[in-house]
Length: 122
Image (cartoon, rainbow, N blue to C red):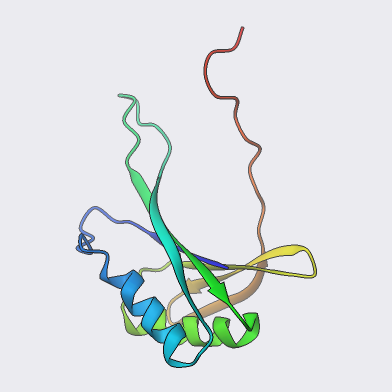
């Protein structure tokens, strides 16, 4: 599982405390833990800069259903922005719960964009 948290210009989580709070929420119910996290870049601006678009938090959980329920409550409690996603798989299908205040859109199919080739192409 993973949590994808959009990063806004005025986001003040420079110490990445959200990841610790997510880890505490899962561990407190013996549902799992945070494996790691990292920032992902967005689309390139006209000047070529690629700003941070979101933080991805990778999780190891023992019960996907229970972890989803706990994460939905914990993420709202720590004040994540609209558009935060909880990614998981059920029977080989990639799904996401998407935060749209005041609630969650559950079980949305995840559509992956095709990978663009890296480096130069002719």
